[in-house]
Length: 128
Picture 1 (tube, one colour):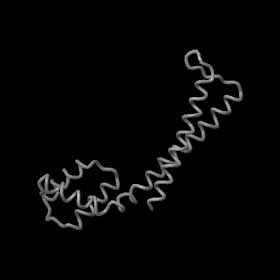
Picture 2 (cartoon, one colour):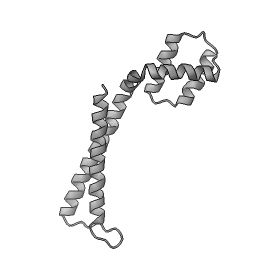
Picture 3 (cartoon, one colour):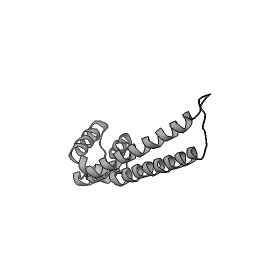
């Protein structure tokens, strides 16, 4: 069903969909179906809205990014503490014939998760 085109309604629709991480192609396809636009028209309108409302879209995406980043940090902390605890209690994780290499690898992975999560939290909070 084609509805009369209201620019404000289209803007709200696109910003809301992008804030929910909807795929670009799906949004444009729905714009064509809902408002009777052809693909190039819908794509042009989409690009203008995307450029004009970039900050609004990022703000809508921030809660998800914070949760994902905090989960990464938490997983890293748990992994780091667990690996250090197990290593100090004598657990040796061998990779091939190299003792302790697995322990070092898990520690490095845990530190990477913490650093990546911290960077994600920092960026998400800095943009707001």
